[in-house]
Length: 158
Image 1: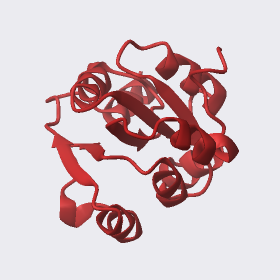
Image 2: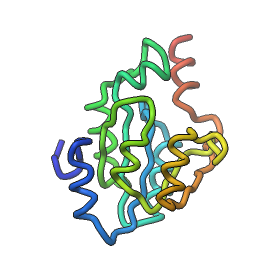
Image 3: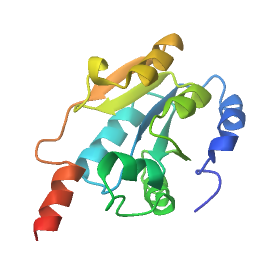
């Protein structure tokens, strides 16, 4: 994967400085099994600014959130897949259960989450960080019948 699209967490502050003046849109998640809902959400997010920067949970944080059999694909492959999608400009893998350090370093203008979230259900720490930076928070409506968890459960049942 080209280094210009993948930004290690240690390089996020430097890359963000290079992007000063741009309207940066950020979203984050596990992106364990990509589906059309992800793609539509990413396209929506990209339409809101000059570039889309995606944060991806590392393997350990996915395991702690989703269970011992997840992630299905390692973080390096999830990052490569996302970086190859047209709407995505930059990708960063972050550690820990919360995206707060990534959000604080990327300092977005806009933050986008899927419609399975609402302002009240965002992680309190992440929401506080976003609000303290005066980041606009947007939600993309769920694509009915499309979720990674549902796909994973269906696959396990055979």
